[in-house]
Image (cartoon, rainbow, N blue to C red; front, side, top):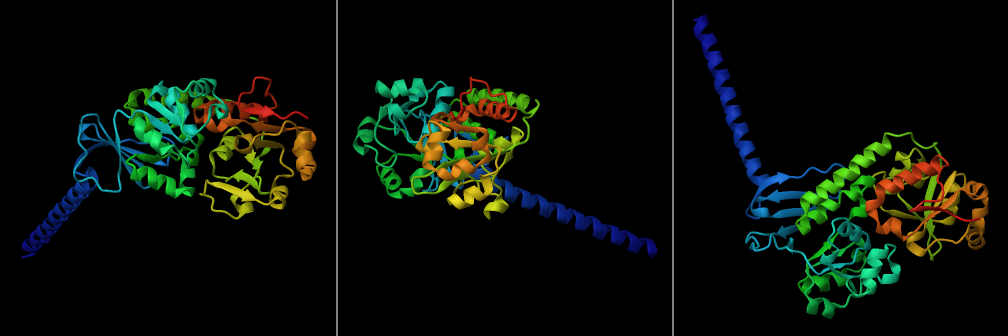
Length: 386
């Protein structure tokens, strides 16, 4: 009797385990079906980003690519392929080959330049005189790339007549939703890129994968990025600069001081170079995860940054001051700042914003500044004259 009861207990346990395994496998199958199929397409591979958090790229059978940018889906459709019938209506379709692109995000242009595909760009929202890169400025000047108006006031008729294949905007367009809505009503695919929202500086550079995907140049984009990442790894392995507090800012016409959030890419670059970003989330009373720009009163800025060792003025927005004297004349309170007294004031030009592909060079210059070895060949960070 004892042996029979023991065998019964084992039988019950085995049956229970089999039931659990069958249930688990059934659950996995349902989960696989849900995650591996989208719009009637079979998922083949999900690319894993090394630094970027603002986009995800998924590969599907037939050469289709799904790019998800902060919850918004874009389907890249290979040349000659039909749009899937089951595609949700809120998905933006980008057809290959993507040509005659309207670049309303000037910072994205450098990715096309690195991929050797400026010929795929037909239009821009930035005039020739506002480009820091001489090659791009020349293309706009001779109308190889046509200026068709600002991002919020493009020449709709021109774009329609010429057959624009894609419009690349930055998040500024969200402040003028009517423009985006009209562009979409006219049938233009509009992609809003968010490379400037990446918290890690290399995350910005990783956006070349997005453009490589759209242009059908994924291998070239991957090769370029890995080369830059290798250079970045070599750079951070070297001796860091002397730890100093650095404030990165600009003055706005409405009287506020614009700064980058403590979790932004510039703040992270300062930390990677061995310095300390002058502004902390605790000081500002903001979400530590928020990477957007912030506006401070002059008093708030003074309280936090007056003792900073180094000041870097962001001249990409409203232009830079010619000298420390000119800045102090306009903003007398600045004469009390430690960095102003020591002359450790630098400024950036348009190329800092328009050239996200120059992260490794910028990081090297930051390290040199913190080590007080900047020299005279600085490309992104220029010492402000007395």
